[in-house]
Length: 155
Picture 1 (cartoon, rainbow, N blue to C red):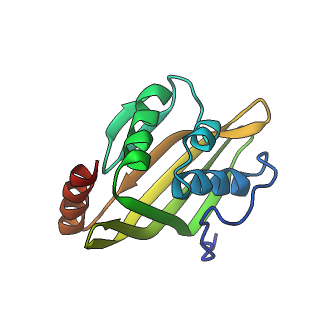
Picture 2: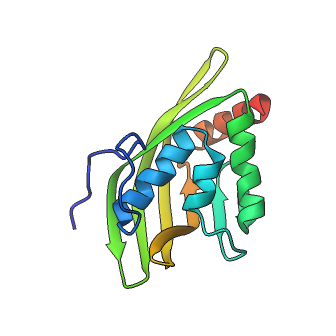
Picture 3: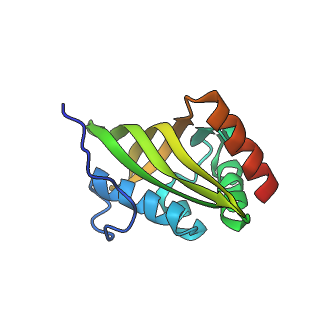
C-alpha cells in the first residue's frame, strides 16, 4: 500500500462521516479550528477512548481527553498540524490511519516546526466513525523537550 502524500488539513470540507477519510478531515478541522464541539463529535465520548500524546500523556475517557484539547485550544500558543504520508486500513467496524503529522507551533517569538509520528484508530458507532485511540510521538528528543516546555509556558 502506497502512502498518501496529499495532506489532510481540515480545510477540505466536511462530507460523509461514514467514510474514514472524512472522519480524519473532521478531526483536523476541529484541531486546527480550536473547536471543542467538533472534536467531541469526532471522538467516542465513552470511557473506552484513549489519548497518548507528547503533551497530555495517557488520558482515558472523553472527560480527560477533552481537558487536554481544552488546554491547547484556550492557551496562548497556536498549534496547527496536518496529516500526510499516511495509509488507511479498514475492517468492518474499525479503521486506523498511520504515519506522520507536520505542523507549526507559535508562542510569542518562539516558533517550532513539528514532526510527529501518529496513529489514529476509529470504530463505527451508529453508522459513523468515532475516534477511540490516538498515539502521537516526537522522535527528536530536543524538539520534544522544546515543545513540551513551550506549551507549558503558553497554557
